[in-house]
Image (cartoon, rainbow, N blue to C red; front, side, top):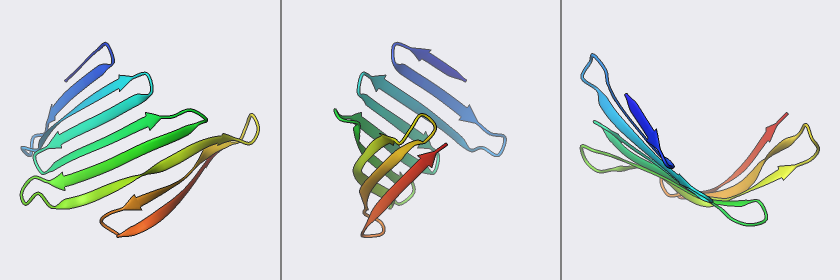
Length: 109
C-alpha cells in the first residue's frame, strides 16, 4: 500500500513469510532522500543536486539485530552529455565498509 502527496511518498508492505517493510521518499527542489525500514535493515540514500551538474550523495544501511553497518558511502558525481545519444555520470565515493575510494562511470545510450 502507498500514498503520495506534496513531494512525500510512503509505502508499506508485508509478505506471507512475515517479512515487512516501509519506505518514505521526500523530494524538494535539489534534495532527495529515501528512507527504508525493514524487519532486518535500516537504510537511507540522500542526494543533493549542486550547480554545474554535480551531485553529492550518501548511502548508508545498518542491520536491525546488531546495528552493524552493512553499507556506508558518500561521494560526488557529475553528469555529462557527449551528444544527444550518449549521456552518463562520473564520480568518486568513499566506501566505509571497504575502507576505499570507488570510481564510477555510468554511460547510457
